[in-house]
Length: 403
Image (cartoon, rainbow, N blue to C red; front, top):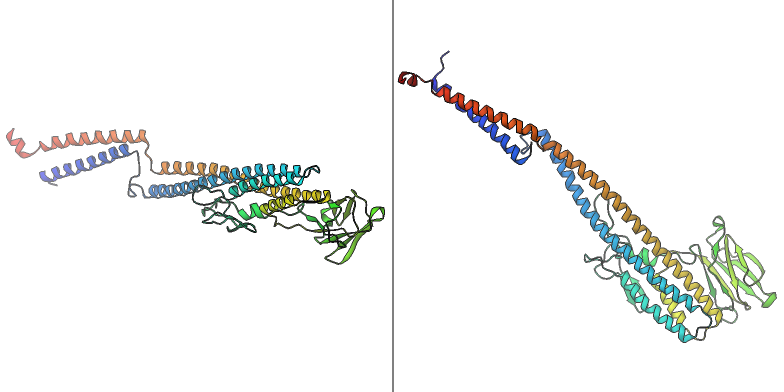
């Protein structure tokens, strides 16, 4: 078989170009540190790296949403802590107002103090989240969610909460209605209150405490009326179930002795008058913090009240305030639990991101030791091919004749 000189030269040039290209590719991989720079380098590895990169992008988005949620929940937890401190100051003022030696002017001074604290509490309920919204706006509101009107504070937000919308649905706001307007009334199971005397229409001469549950299984959820008949040692009481119309219990009225029926226990105190009446109703989740404060202030501003009236109103005001504080504390606990969940989720997201970064690195990153060795081999091969081509180039007939 005869080989032309041009054929040998072309073959040499082609081999040199191929070796040079492979050497350049090896050098470029060393420079970039990537084994897969184009999908054509390794289609399987490129797809694997792309999946990992997509997963890292999702984790980054979740981490940004998590930080936004953590900021909102941290601010809300701080606001609820501030609210609890103010309510504690209000409670101390109400306890002082129960002092029988206080004059109407002194109670009016305490009412002024509570009004000032109420204004601070309202500003906390309308606290901004730093992003153009409000912490307790629920599902969002362009204006402060709580409006102070002539008839009391009104919630103008929407129940619920704004969430980030990602797979984990991190909360960004707190439900303002649940926080400030949905405490359990009374002692959480039933509500006691005094009614005007059925004979004289005057306030009752005796008073009732907030009561307690002694047998949860015996609770009926009905409404009751307690009526006093007679005076002094001959006074008697009758407990009427106003839901069914039946008499539940009756007996001799003994001041300070607990009255137990249908799983409930309460105490009537004071020298009762003929016609004094009290009612017991099921508790509801409709107790509003600002209504409780407004009612307490209104009672403190009343003049010429009897000692019984002062005690009764104070007992009920403290009861409702304690229920409101318990509800705020419960919401604060929920917010704290959300923050704990965010911490746990952050750890999980960090681990997931680390895994996908390792997966992406395994799919496309270069083994530097192997790459350096490969480059050196390519360089040695190219130099050898270059020397060989130079030798072959001198083996033409014309070079032979010239020699």
